[in-house]
Amino acid sequence: MEMQDKILINVSEAAKLLGLGKTFTYELIGQGQLPVVRFGKRVLIPVKHLSLYIETLVA
View 1 (tube, rainbow, N blue to C red):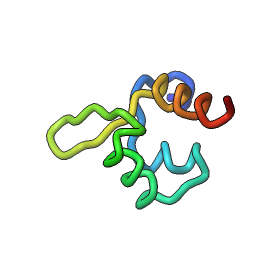
View 2: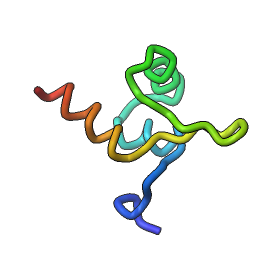
View 3: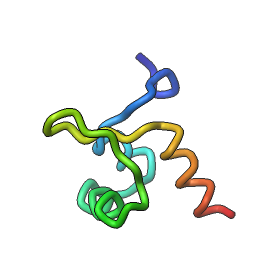
View 4: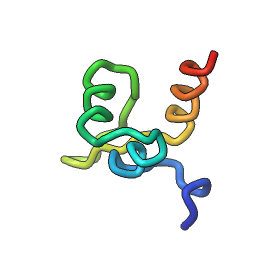
């Protein structure tokens, strides 16, 4: 499945897309800047929210 076909991605995938480390990505999550969906211990980020976050950085 291609990245653009996914609705949710894990923290590693989000960090790679943002060009950031996983630790900093978790910091963004902890600060509430990146909303997440939790399934048990899994932390997933909605792709549309990741796109919105990137747009706020550009604007």
